[in-house]
Image (cartoon, rainbow, N blue to C red; front, side, top):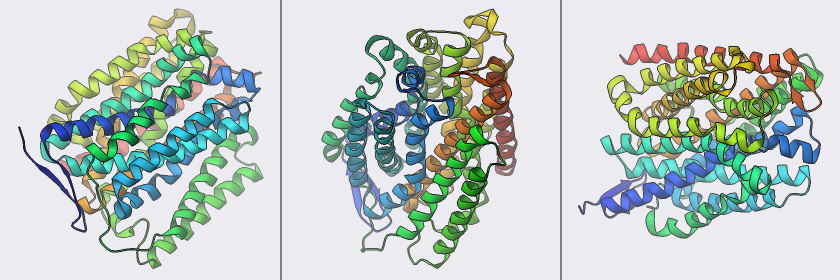
Length: 474
């Protein structure tokens, strides 16, 4: 088959994948990059207790090893998505891959907490550049049913990356130590840089030179940083703390300034008129809340397996194998059929309900009954719920934005999800500490139950919100 596919940008610039084989080779590269991005959101989770002991970190401080990545990733996704539209998706993809590899090597060689967290920040910046660029290239390269299939593969890679990160991290920590969880991703980043010019279309790029909205970028990134910083401080100081109130007030102020800047700027980072679409506005809210319920699960489970069930890191990694396999198989085989039958809106709602059921199982099953009864059924429900809700949420946002804004759509979807992940991890950790307390570096059993229950409540509330656009669509 020798069909030619042309990806047309808003300015008339084109990128071409000359054969069907070329398109699918490009998909493999893009999906591999996304897999690594999602892998790094969770691969350190099993290593957290080892890092915590080695660097003597408190339970709230250890969240920064996760959130330094998630925060820089989520905070810059919107900026990077718009940059992909203006300056070229492939160019941003390559630059992001280089930064990601540099941050990975810095984290792997860390001998102190500041160096490790600094490496995670650089990783997050690189991931923020390459992830929306990769999705933009995917949306431009595939259309119609081929796009639906490509998005399913993308979702399978994301689900597998998030779940397999815990499994792979456990095996690597047990065999080689916690630094190895970073080194393992370097070959994929190097391959992405080497192959991008040969396999990927240039993607979107503005035909005329345009000013970049740096004030808007600075204010929205500052708002995200302040918001998550305030959430993290809740665990130590409570909601009434002056530092928490100041951080949340700063986030609200910067968000208001950002909106004012966007209204006045000729080339805004985020054109506000796109939010005239109720579907897009609701979709962004679903991505934030769904991200909180999904991503925080893997952090909580990693700690739960080792602290509540006293598993070694390698055992905890193996305990996640069924989750990885289930999420991958479901996303790749069943998800496309379910989306075709129900549509992305209804599929998303069903997935969130299943996710809540998994959280509730983990919250209420007695730890004395063992892994097969107390943990495995809950993990399988979580895997199915994540697979059913993650990709359809992205599809809802992407379908509500014109093709000239594919980078912006991917940036919005990714940014909302990652901000939700950071807020969810911080909030549920705070709930666990406030309910169950912590003994040294270990969270109490009742705290884990409260955190999982709170995550279930968020998932059900998100499903209720999603049902409003599902009914409207029907």
